[in-house]
View (tube, rainbow, N blue to C red):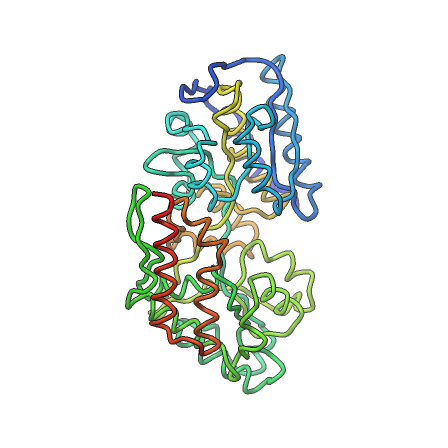
Length: 430
């Protein structure tokens, strides 16, 4: 999509306000070469050409500003990133200087000693003051910063405008209304899920926990204890798992669904509602419901409130092994600058992490508004512990949800078991 003239003017002004790079001093390399080749790893996206075009523009400007410097960009598959990154941390000669990574990976990469501490540089960067607070949290471990937010993604409530109009329904304003509306839709249209939900959809379930006052864990400074078995968290788990069953989304079909499955079902016209991200917009637009849906923030417990959403997204950081630390930090800032993030929104639909740029694109692209409102209402993030990667890979939370959905365990027993597994993971990393 093209950027509007207003946004183009904003970006032109921003381009001249970039500050000069400052030298880092905590690299594991004793070199800080001012020329040579910088290697960059970015994620390969579905339909990657627009991303490549936006990145190429940044690279061209960077090389022009830094004589004798070349930037080599490699796009790596997301599915194999774990192996590639592990190898890079173990062998600096094979490592890039700058790297894109998922924001839930930050703490683990810091524990492995792979990322450069850029606290000083980020703080001195003029644009950083407008960074979304939760996005900033995603690059923060023990009070230090290890990268710069690249884009942010949140989820909201997609709903079928044609179905709601035919049945005389209004978008739900509370979680209780969400559940009752879902049942009404399924009762009137048995071929539709009222709201399609997934037992393997962790970040679709978590807003129910957070809206009811629960947390994933408590603690700070890398030391965490699970809170998923608290009374408030259990209330949220119960609210989410109550959406499974013959009155809405049958357990036999929905218990194994993940986030992509739910969006696929909604886009195919099989559901009245779904919890999907701003990043789901393209898929829904390409589906059967094009022109027959709208999006509102996922409602909270109280009427008119917005449920806290998980702030997903990616970051870009510098590896400690770089021998071009000053240049690498500068390139990190240029790849995550306001100008670049606006261009990446135009290319890929990625939501900017800067409040002013996000407000501008939301004003010009109506579909962004509910997601921007969700971000403004306050979002949540996972514990900044290397143990989170274990919790995620071991499917601790999906298993908990599925045990409740299947009736194998009640909420209390399932949450207690999940809390034990989470604490084991937190404890294993110190």
